[in-house]
Each structure stands twice: as structure tokens, then as C-alpha cells.
Image (cartoon, rainbow, N blue to C red; front, side, top):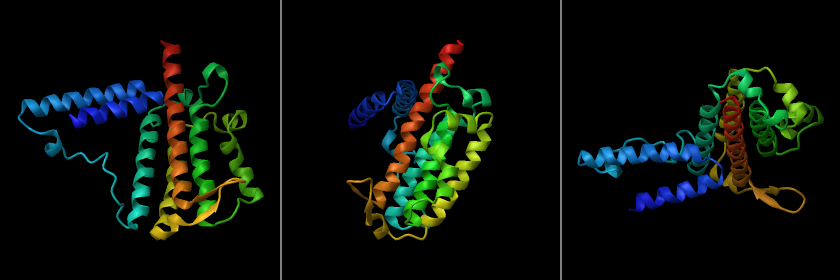
Length: 223
């Protein structure tokens, strides 16, 4: 019964985030696996070996840094799974010809991670030259759309992978105590490095929801 209640909570949370169809598919798969296990006299809690939803420390990293990275990697995997099959036309699609495209949002995800590398690993503000390179992706809008239009999915996946490799390389050098170090976060707040990197993949998950919304709109329009 506790498993069922847990899934209900998950569904409620995800529905609020606008991911009803995805949750339905996952929940249907869950019910099918439950049915199969009980028919075979098994117990789903003891027979499954899939550790997709087990957040564990990442080998080669300190305990808490490794757990943080595991969360970041799960978020990234869901982003890639949602976009790797898309055509150039689908990546460039904008709802009613306005707003952000999926490609623009992928560029944004990459640029946010890159700017937080500068802020947290180098402990400085981006230079004017760096901001010129990152500004379109950070601010989105027509500038980001024009910069990304025409790129294939491989372009974004490779860019995300390259930036992530640098993140992983830098995190490998950090001790858990680094996560607790505090810095100004806007004009009135402080944030520690743990929150700053939580914010990176929190932002990614938010935009992945937008990506799914844009894709769903495009499918409905074409059907």
C-alpha cells in the first residue's frame, strides 16, 4: 500500500508540473510490473534490480558531491531522452511562431551550467567577453532563436556533454565542505554552493517541462 501512496504523491506533483502524459505512461508501466510480479508470486520490492531511481554517491567523488552529481546526471538524462530524437524542424518550432524553441531552451540549459562553472569554480563574475558569448542563451528570446535555428539534435547534445565534462572534472576536485561555502546570491540573499548547483539542474528540469509542452503543442497542431 505504501508503494501505491508514493505513486499517488508522485502523480500529484508531476501533474502540477504539466507532465500528465509522461506520468500516465510511467504509472501504467508500474501497474503492469506489479501485476506481473504478483502473478508470479514475487514481491516487486525484492525482485527488481533497476536502480534508475536510486540516488547514490558517484564513484570518484566525495559522498555529498557525488550525490549532487547523481541528481544532475539524472536530470540531464531526462533532457536528452526528451530531445535526442527530434528533427531540426521540431527543435526550431515555436508556439504560434513566438517564444522559445526547444533548441533555444537547450542552449539556455548549456549556458546556465557554463556560467555557474565560472561563478562557483572560479569564484568570479563572467568577463564582458564571456557574457557576449553566453548572453543569447541566458536571456533567450529572438536572439537565442536566431542563434540556434537550423542546428540538429547532435549539436546540442555535444555542447551539453562538453560543458558537463568540465563540471564533472571540477567537482572531482571538491570536498563536501565546499558545498557549504556561502556567497552572495542576488542583492539580498546568500546561497551556498549546494544550492547554486541545485539551482542549475532545477532550472534544467523547469525548461525540460517547457520542452515537453512545446513538443506536445506541435504534435497536436500537426494531427
